[in-house]
Image (cartoon, rainbow, N blue to C red):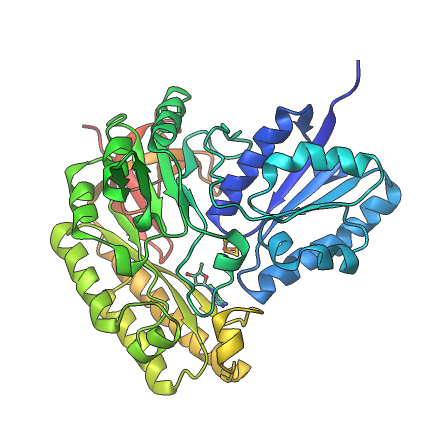
Length: 444
Ligand code: 5AD
Ligand code: SF4
C-alpha cells in the first residue's frame, strides 16, 4: 500500500487565514494527505501568509530562509506559499525564493491537488486567479488544532471598501457571501461535535448579503438564524466596519443571550481629516454616534478596536484626536499598528508616507500606554461582578486552573474544581491584570 504523504501547514495573519488553512487541510485530507506532527517530518510544507504590513511579510521571508536547509536535506520536500503574499507577489515570489515549488492565492485552494501533481512531475505550479463566487461553502473544514470548543465559520470573502492603506481588496478580491443554509448546517454540526462557541468571520460581516430569488438574508438575519440553532452555542463575529453597523444588528444581539456582547469596531484614527484620507467613509462624529448606539442598546457590551498611527500626513493634532477618542470610547481592548505602506494601494499611489519612523514609534508608544490604562480600568470595573464563562482549557500557569472567556471576550481564569472545558461556569471576579480577570466559581 502506498504510504500517505504528510502535510504541515503554518498560518500567519488574521483569523480568516486560520479558517482558510482548515479548508486547505480538508481538501488535502480528501486527497490522501495526513497531517504531519511537525515540519521536519513533512513531505509538503504550506505557509499561509499575510501581507497586511511589511513586517508580516518579513516574518514569512525569514521563515522561508530557514526552510532552505530542510529542502537541502530532503530535496523531495515540497514547499508552497498560500494566502495574501502568494496573491500579491505571484510568480515574482518563485523568482525571488528559488526553493518554493507552489504558489496559490486565497481563491485557488480547490486546485491544490492538481497543482501538487504538476509539482510532482517536476514543474513549478501557480494559481493566483481571484474568483467572484468562490466561498468554499461545500467544504467541511478540518479542525486540526484548537480546543474543540471554539471554531471559526467563514461567512463571506473579499472586500471592496478600498481603505487607502489596505492591501486586502487586492489580495482577497471581490466581496461575496456564502449561502446561509451551509453556514447554519456547519453551526449545527459543530454543536453535535461538542463545540460551544463559533465566530462568524468576514472582512466586513455587516455587509453580508445573500440573495435567493429576491429573498434577501442580511447579517442581522443570518445572526438570528445561527443564534437560533442552539441556546448553548455562543456566537461571536468579526470584523464590523463602523459605516455598516446598524441598530438592527444591535437589536438582534440584545435578543439572544447566546450572542456574545462584544463588538470589534476598528476606528483606525480619531481624526475626521485622517479618516477621510484613509477613505473610511465615516467621520469622528459618526463613529461616536455608533458607539453611543452600542451603549444604549447593549449596555454591557465590550468594544475593541484597531488603530493605525502615523498614516500619511498625520499631525500631532490628529494624533491627539486619536488619544481623545480612545479616552472617550474607553476601549476594552485594542490592536495598535504603525502605518506600513503597501505597494499599489491608494495611499501608496496618492500620498507620501511622510511621518518619520521615530514619530510613528513614539506615537505608538503613547497609544499603547493609554490602552494599557484603559484595559486595566475596564478590568478593575469588573471586580465583584459574576460572569458566565465558557471554559476553554487548562490555564498555562497552573494545572488546577481553567481559562475561558466571558461574553465580553475577556479571558477569565478560575479554579478548576469539577469543571471541564466546554462547561459554562459562573465566576465571581476577584482580581485582575490589564489582560486577564481572575475569580472563583459560584455554585448556582
Ligand atoms: N499599515 C498598518 N496597519 C494596517 N492595517 C491594515 N493595513 C495596514 C497598513 N498598511 C491594520 C488596520 C486593520 C487591521 C487588520 O490591520 O488597523 O483594521
Ligand atoms: Fe488577513 Fe489581510 Fe493579512 Fe490577508 S492581508 S492574511 S486578509 S490580515
